[in-house]
Length: 293
Image (cartoon, rainbow, N blue to C red; front, side, top):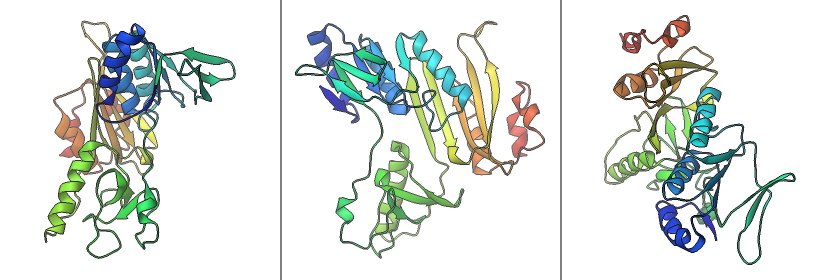
C-alpha cells in the first residue's frame, strides 16, 4: 500500500503490515517533522526503514546545516537509512509497492511507502468566491478574511503575524489550536488579535526538538553547544539561534534542551538584537537571559 500522511495512521498501518510482511521494510518519503517522526515510530515498532529526503539533510525547511546533519546522523545511529538529495522518481512493483526508485542509479526495496510530504490547501471551495488566497486563505491578525463575517483558521489559513509583519502559513497543530480559538472568539463578538510567538515541537526516539520563530528570515545561525557526546554527557544538547540580516533573532531551535523555554521564546518575541555579541553567545557560560535585560 501507499499511504499518505494522516495523524495517527502510521501506527495502524504498521500494526497491519508488520505481521503480514515480517517487519517491513518501509520507506518514508519526506524529511520534515512528520517524516522524521514517522520513520522513528516505524523503527520502534520493529520495521526496517528507509527515509528519502529531497534536500541535503532532514529538517531542511527550518533547520540549518549543523542541526540537519545532526538529525541525519542521529537517525542513522538508530538504524534508519537516510537518503539525502532524493526526490523519488516512481514506485514499482507487481500488484503492490515493492521498491522506490530514488533516481536512475538508486532504489530501495520495501513493502509499503508513506508519503509525508506536506499538504496542499484545497482551494476548490473558494472557486467562484471573492475570498483572497495565495498558497492559503489570507486572514488578518483577527483571522478575518477579506469578506465580512468570514473567518479561517488552521492549516488552510495564512495569518498575519505582526511580529514579522507578514502573512504566515504555520502548519503545526499548535497553530491550529491558537488560530481556531482566536477565530472562534472573534466570531462570537470578541476583538482579539494574534499575538503568539509561533511554536512547534517534535520527538523522535529520545530526541526532543522545540522551535520558535521564522526560518525564512534567518541570515546566519549561531550554534550554542550545551553538551556533546563524551565528557559524561549522555546525549548532545544544543541551541541553534537564527539571526536575521538586521542582526535580530528571527528563530530559535532547541535540541534536547529544556529549562530555558521562556528565555528562548522571548529572544524571538522581542526580536532581540545580537550583532556584536554573536561569538560570546556561542559560549556555554554566556547567560542568554542577560540579552533580555
